[in-house]
Image (cartoon, rainbow, N blue to C red; front, side):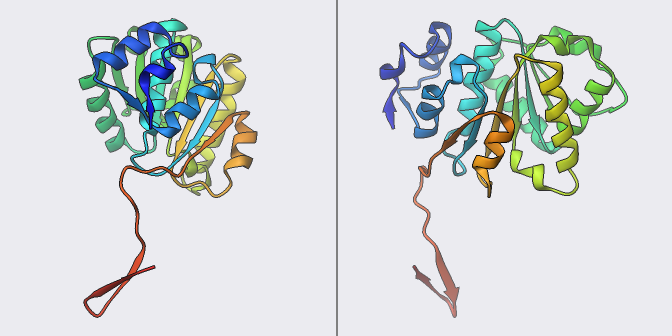
Length: 222
């Protein structure tokens, strides 16, 4: 854990002020590593750290930078509609006073032109694929795309759509920043190379994880 004040010069002032307003006093390891590897310099990042280690705040910082500094839009991509709804509620609660937030995870045959009015769009990979195919006119304003659960590239069902989606986005938006998040990637360096991304790996977690075997009413820990 690192003192937030130590990173004041590396964090854009408006974003730093938001963190202070939210009550942050420290940053977790994956967050400091991401900042040091170019988070605010629009570098692509692949963040591979355990659950609850602070990956979501890395995404939030990239989103804030895209909206406040780059004056563009941000897209947060999740694999499931239920997760999209959850993230929409979370982000709206945290940032409703700072920017406009929308969710788009329904009709895949619509360009959803109303999204042009919003700064952050939370969606699924299938819906974003549809928006790309419908040539949504606001897509050229997107500065960062966050790909949550990016390890699903290996999923036989969702993987191909996600891979094509990333490929099209990189060709369509030459200055796009990609932020990939995952707790479970078997080949992180290979994936980072494909994304042209800086790899952020850390094992810190807020609660110690002990492994053991439960048998006959007892647990034996390693």
